[in-house]
Image (cartoon, rainbow, N blue to C red; front, side, top):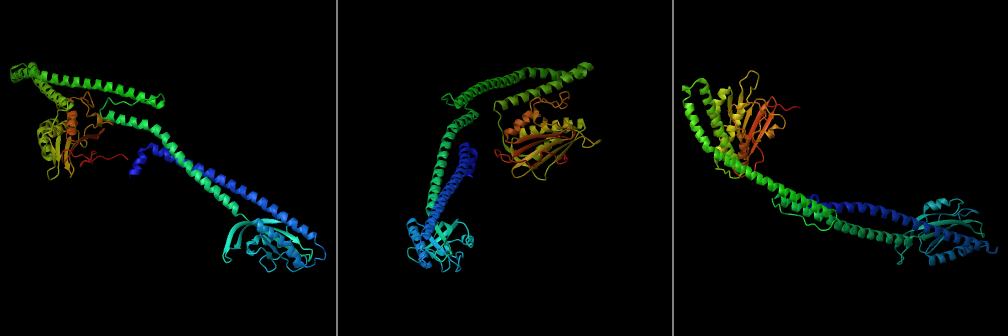
Length: 533
């Protein structure tokens, strides 16, 4: 696993390995070509020398036979006089001789060299003459050669030594009996094999050394390129961690130096932009907080006056009474908006804290449904709670969780629709849990969400339909605050929707505060939705 991780992360290792593989292929191909050329050259030279020497021996033998006197009628004596000088020269020049024949008839061809009529170099196995060459000289034929394996007795006189060689055959006629004999000369090629083996070892050694040299050079070259990249990676990681003053060291004027200069310029610009954004965000948070606090005093005064007017509305004329009623409604919404702005400013300032306790999400769902039922009855919406027959506990801040569920249920009531034509609009609140997480899902069957709106719905003051009235008096910050509450618990708040099929919002909390979430016990896509094929 460690080697695989190193291979995936190291460009240098992959470059060196790729270069080695390609170099190995090239060196192997070149080495094979050179060895083949060397072998063919050695064999061709050896064959030319062997054939030339065999031709000289044959010409010399024929000349000696032609100069023999007619009184030399003893065929055996003439045969020995023919072959013994050649055998002696063979001993000094390292080749063996076999003189085969005749077959016993006048003018006949040479017999098998393995037969008793053959004369040969002492210690040579006559079977060293290949059968194909013997077959070639079964009739009168021109000189020929072929490869063979030469077998001789070893120095101890018992063992047999084998070595590769070349067998050259030619025919001569003895004047004493007029018969045709075949002269085989067997030349060993051990020296050529040794030379080829030496060349092979030299090429292998040179190839290995060349591969090691290429690997070392590639490693050094890759190191020069990869080192600045690794430095840039480490500096980028430190920049991402918030250490905005980190910079790359610039040395030289090459491409890598210019890259480091550009990187440092980018880091400086990012630092400047981030500082500006931080200052702007700080000013914005302070402004929201100050305005929210400063508005509380005049709002309290206006609220007191509004309460007086609202209590006395029965004595007013209808237009004034309606104005007092609208003033009271807008004051309620204004107070809610101020509370939400203060809560948002606490989230932005990182001052929000949890009061963790064991919370039963089933009880939370029932309390929220009971508190929002008057609004649902006003809208003609039916609220349904689906929960297991046992508590669903999670370590959470009960006030914040109830606020999240209340926001989700209120929004669902605003957008509720019937499950079927003519049916009563319904909102379903589902609760479920497992060993690791607990979840609450709120499902409506209204207009739903268009593609891409499931992520935008949590933006501050975002509305799917700006022309749609807020019947529940929402401020546009409810879902944003709910998302921050979910994140504060280490949980998830997710949305699903499809045009014409409604929407579902799911809140998932870990059973134990601080435990990372891996899954939710409730599917984000409702079970009653049919996925398109």
